[in-house]
Image (cartoon, rainbow, N blue to C red; front, side):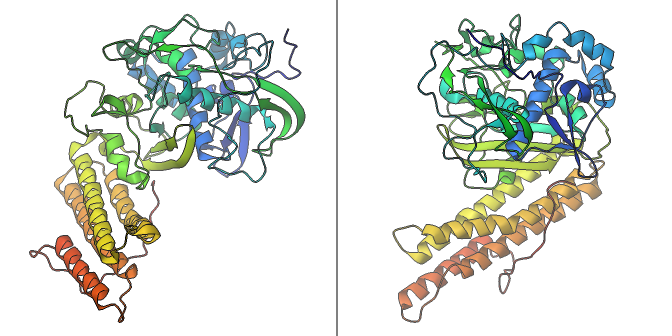
Length: 521
């Protein structure tokens, strides 16, 4: 029989949100305090970017579960004005116990089994070999950190499901969240109005955040809130001695995470027909296998996938259209709100992981300006896609020239990878200069079009100069190897000819700029 936990903690009323203030200080707040507008911040002060993103996701999931706006007019009202505390307390009073982390029905966890297992599945957060190494081994952690850890584990427990996907029983791909200027307003910006929910998702379970085992369902039969709190893994938090959190340094009550166990067959594999549950912050696109989550390329920087996240297009062997293909549902909704908040240009926060099963090889985290014209003007989006396509074509041509010039069996080896890294690093400032200009437009006029097209042309010229300069920096002509010198010279001529057709003048010598631009205005 489980004994009472020495510490009480509730995800609604206890502080787990470290709010960054305008002066850089941090104030801790509860879900209730943020919704009531009693405390707010410009960001969250977690030690890692992925924790900052998932804490925002959890905050919005709680809002979606308990205080969804019925239509867009009400959502705009919620974005602008906090809820009254009396209204909040009236709503949560009947369900407060469901959000206790410790007790008879622990939130996002199971009741510990009578017989403890010897081990469990590999954790997604804090595995033995973590891509994000901590200064000290992760052991006992503070309760606010543990809440986010458990939520991440449940959201990304792909091994417990039926393959990869954009929702329950599978890992989502790239996640795109809206930062509307403050933590409170952003919590609402990443929720869907109930009109949209009714049209896109199945009916909710009676208690969608419940930790009880459920009868297996097809993904398409899972409601929105049920999916946001989907718990494919069984785990629980074990009390530990008070002290400093080995991850964040917070001093206070601590816990350890129990093994991750299969909980039940919560999602059945569909025998036929489509079976899709879409995370509201996950864009989808058609590929050769059907509709699926978008994943950023591990070989290129995240900004090369921005156009695909804002306006997904089908890739692969099929060009079949699908009604669910498009940006994240919250972003589609955002385009139609006409919101004008404290920040003139909101941000788009992007998070993705390059994974090999449970192993994280690389993390992609970026933020970009998100003006209405940038996400809704098709000409701008197509121009962005053309800019990226051109840069990718130049990079491929550079790689081919370097491989042939080196003429070895390693196909460039480390030198090629270093050259590609240099190319993307040198190309990035010009792209963000274009992006900042596009995001600052008030209207799409002839003058505005000329301005962004001029910057696009400047970027195309810049990446060509960068490619030639990088080629020269990564080949070595030796007087003792005339054949290699001849091969290098031939490849440089071919590269220059491809990058500068006969209708254009090529530069006498490649140069690169040292410009630097912020990603978001």
